[in-house]
Image (cartoon, rainbow, N blue to C red; front, side, top):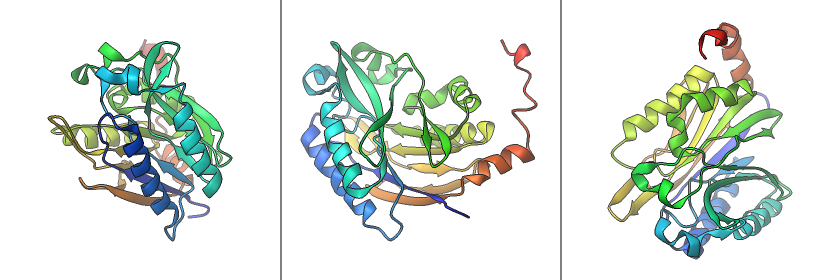
Length: 265
């Protein structure tokens, strides 16, 4: 494996409605990650890590234009010379609330952002949040990467569109709850297999009200094999990815060459 991409998944608990507590916890775990022997090139956070699902208080707790998130994560990236796929946060923008991901480069610049386009009715997202209206891709380690958030992975059209746009690394921050662990694992593996890409998914742990979250953050390779998977405790997961594997798999099973899109629409 030449020049592997080193990744750290920050599988963390989230205290609902406490952005300061959550920021301190996340930074502590990120500091732990970069002090490891295999310092990561990129760190990945879960969904809505700043507030959790305190949706009824989102207008009070949300991050106005993402300023607080940008300041915290930018400083970390500059200090440690790393990328951060900053999960997603509750963001306020032009009088509306969004579930928004930011990606930061080692200089601390935001190189991509994505607001969740499929809102999850079982957690009342559609009552409090506004749907995003654009897809997200960005360059990473000489490859194209993309972002989906949690419920988005139930929509294979989105993953396929990103793959057709050149994405080989798909990041999935999530707050995926019990009891649907089987769905989580199956859908992540399916998205990896059908699109012959890496799927890098970071889920939270802990409880929020009556809802519990099982963690099991994982990275799935283009064959659908699990590279690393967490349990249900707060932890940092490390992995090294062979980026050449995507092209190897796509050449051995030429799914994209054998598509017949004229029959699909």
